[in-house]
Length: 167
Image: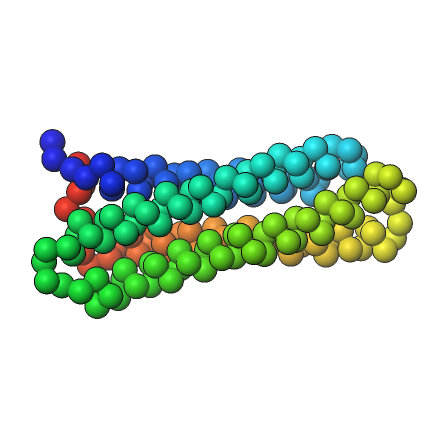
């Protein structure tokens, strides 16, 4: 059995990112469906904890991705940036991470402020409308994240080069 441990770690990192996105999506649906502001706040704290893990997953994928590029193209004389599938995959990964680290936390922070004020001061029509808008935006955030992740998976599976580290 010959293989690359860097590639194996890359697969684990991809699984980690996938699990974070799926868990976030499920918790978001549960938060939207919940009527009790105290439980919404609790779910929001859990989601924040998951969000804090995303930079770790991103770092694992980034470091092992660089290692995979080196393993695949290091001694071949082929420049990695001439491989269109790899460039597209890197761009999709970059958008996925920037979107996840900038827009997700900002939207979640706004939503949790509304939930906190609803818990403390009661629900108003304005808060209810704002919360509904933020819920819709966060729902779309998770759809975009899932589509980007599937794009990365597609270009990984159907790229023209095969990784030398497959076990």
